[in-house]
Length: 248
Image (cartoon, rainbow, N blue to C red; front, side, top):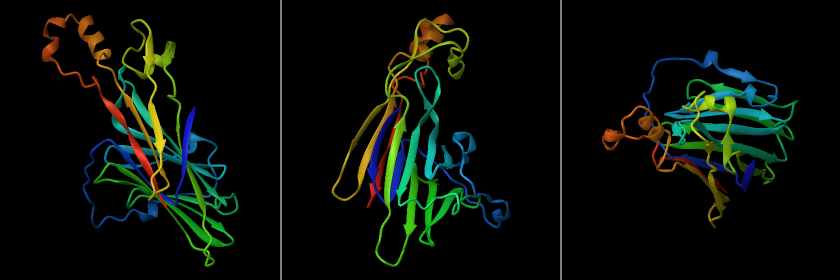
């Protein structure tokens, strides 16, 4: 797994998509909010949240806050719906301990609040997705009255750091299923990072499909090569990914 980190006190993460939102009024769901007071073992104990066509799985593991990112049309050349990667947030000193921790899914605005303490002073991490724009937000708030700050290391983690040959039941995740044609691969992602004077750095990541995809295989298999130029290939040269920036 490849990991790229930067330091910041807040961050925004832009995903390549568009989002729409319809607002509900006069509807109270606060009583149905879900709050956890213990850490999750792994991603199997995650909270779902999101906005528009961006979805997150959020959980806290051993004091680190993690989330997977998904987008409803991030398909690769094999028609596999990809997760865009994982983000890890590690704070120093770490306010999220087993004796002082809560994680709440607030249904009214579809966001997650993670709370802890440092020296009995509250620390709040707020995660939400902007439903009007393709942006994931994370904001950390803490005031100890003495001017001390928390260091936040934000790491992007990707398991597509090299080409991977898909074999056997792995093909159930794509459209080949039990009838793969030749060698099936998931291509590696493109990941880069850098820094700016006004922020704590950025990480850019994306997955780019080639011109030839499973669409071409299906068209040939169905004997439609003569009309192929009239058919729309939704996977050809599709790029899915994003960029995130730390704000100091």
